[in-house]
Each structure stands twice: as C-alpha cells, then as structure tokens.
Image (cartoon, rainbow, N blue to C red; front, side, top):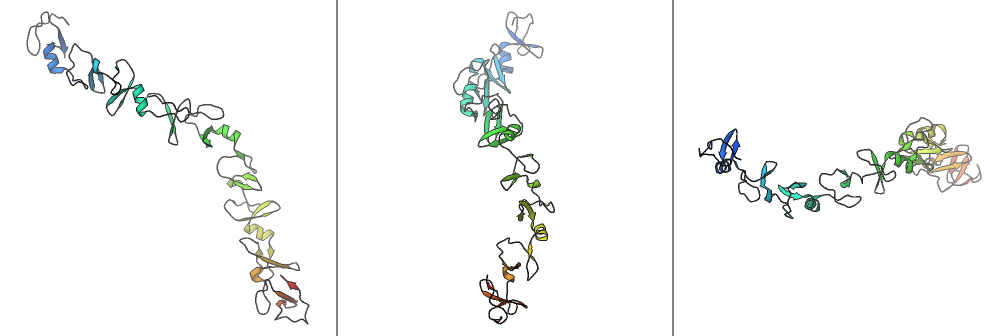
Length: 288
C-alpha cells in the first residue's frame, strides 16, 4: 500500500517507500496498525495482520486458513455453514449431528431449508402433503386418519359421514341411531325438538322421543299410581286384562303385599292376594 504520506500517525516513523494502512483517515505503519487494531483469530488466537484476510461472523474473526468446520476441519471459505453452540460446522456435519429427519422420506432436513412440524414430527415442506391429492398442506387445516394426513376436502370426500337429518358432513363426534349418523345438534326429540345426545330417550315408530314427550304422548299409565310406565332403567311392569302396573305398584288391594310372582284374585275392590280374597268372589285369575 504505497503512499506519499510522510509519517506513521502513531510512531511517527517515515512511511516513504513503505506499506501502511489507513484508520480513521490517519496513516499507520504495518507494525503499529497490527499492534493497535488487528483482530484476534478465534481459532489460533493470534492477531489477524493487515496483510491477511480477516473473515468475520457475528462479531468474531478468523484467519482465512483457520476458518474451518469444527468437526471435519474442511475449509468453510465461500461455503455454506451453520453455527451450533458457537462452533462453526459445514452443512453436512451439522445435518448429521443436529438436523431433523423427515417423517415421510426419512432424509435429513438440511439447514436453511423450510421444514413443517406437526404433532412432534418434522417434514420437508415438499413431503408434507395430502395423502389423497398429494397437494402441499402447508398451514392449511388438515385431518389425520390412520397416521395419514388429509386436506379437509379430500377427507370429507373419502371418509366423512353425512348427517341423516341435514345431509352435511360430520367432521367430529356425532350420534348413531338406527345405523344412521347424525350431528349431535341434529339429533332431536320428535316431539319438543330438544337435543337428545347424551340423554335417555325412547324410540316410537323409529322416531326418538325424550322421556317427557314419550310419557305424555304414548306411555301407558299405571293403574295404581297413574304415572307413565316407560320401562326404562330396568323398571318392570305388569299387564293384566288391558290394565298395567309398575311392578312396585302391583299389590294386594287390602294388605298391600306385592303380588309379583304370586297368585291373585280379581274382585270389585280390585286385585287381591289369595289370603285376602275369597274363592266365593271369583275363581283364581292367575299368576303374573
């Protein structure tokens, strides 16, 4: 770096016919410049003199010959590299040590390439596609079935059930009634249209009814207590001569003992046990 500037700004030595370096518009001899301003190499810890190439990365400096992969020691000059825990690695070493493997193709996802993450696994962007149409899923809504991912239109076309009532796709949940799928919000009492999903109901002529509507419209009434007989929850009922009783209500009209599984007599006062009744009133009616 020849110049006609006369003296080093630091030591005042003559610069005539000598190399020098400029710093903030001032000339310095090589010795003064290196001692005052040279950066120290991260690898060999020696100063990077002004006649050497100074390679810098994130505030750190290397001699050109020291700028190497920390694992395989190949030069990184003018090559792509990655940093891990302040170590510089060539892309191959970094991939082998730290890069994720694609869940689909099992190959390394190279540094700098875009990857997709879903349910703890990683994909190349080009591998993260709909199983049916093979179009990239990106950040679109998707549905997973048997370990495969589908875009919503393809899943609905391939697998989704359609509600028996509204005919629209059932994407989650649902109710099955008479082997037909229903949305929970579409499965309603045929009487009052109250939602029946998760509730007890009774079927009549293949139509579902809540207990209240069925009891009001169709249930037989107990001869004793006049309450509806639904036969739900394990309740038993007794029928005799077009009359019906809850099993707990089928009792002797005089002593109130249960008549279930016992002989009984009919009388103008009602149903009587054999002890309370008399053979003179009626012949035995039977046993229920």
